[in-house]
Image 1 (tube, rainbow, N blue to C red):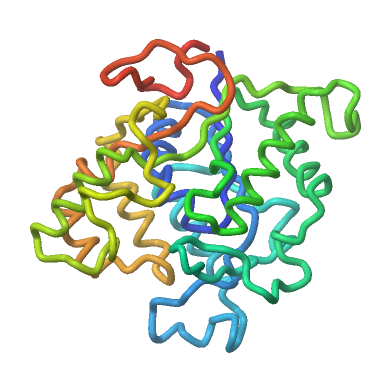
Image 2: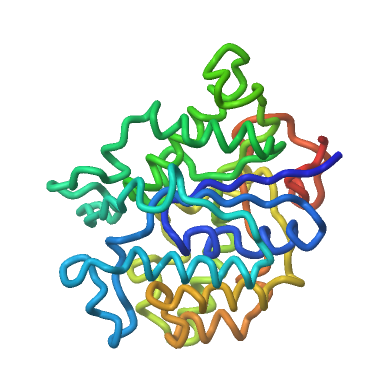
Length: 300
């Protein structure tokens, strides 16, 4: 069976942080890997001082720059099929603000044309077109909270979920191609036990700012998923270097010379090489340690 994996992410860099090693692993073994990015990430914070003028509140030119960053990152991961939902710039990054409870929310003044304000059916139809073209057995996106509440992550979840449902209906939008039912849908996840272990490493190394306010022995934010809710853990240790190079390609967004990156880079595979998923649709296939699948195509 020809394997096809579709990932739906909100902004350039989300794919590499969450799934970079997985993408590289599957691309290397011959799986068709398709990435759909929903915005250009125009509202992102610029971490490179000499490029600060690209920010939304200055030249507002970050989006086109991030197109190039994404292309460079995908080259590092070996992914050749990457697209923007509805085409480049169809939906703008919605931005976010921090809620008092410590998670992201939409700001009070969300601009016209942003992804958060997109018509759900229209946006889903753009993805239905892709689903019926590449015919993935597996789709990866966020959970209903978008991991940490970012409105574009939540909207990506909604669009991916709705599009997967619509794409399977033979009588729906026949002009978009023959119906296709995605067999398995996964939500990106962070293992709670691994996150606690990682925070302990950071604190023991003297880093008190990364994951500030999180105590490895106290309740964690919603993006930390209890291990019993994890459906799959993809061991892609052989592709850690590719993931790290792809992260570096997203240079305006990821601080690669900070203390967290330095420490995690030293820990290597332990931090970056295994990526976790919750099974949202489909039957769980054969499992390994902890009762987790080791292959997103398990059972297919």
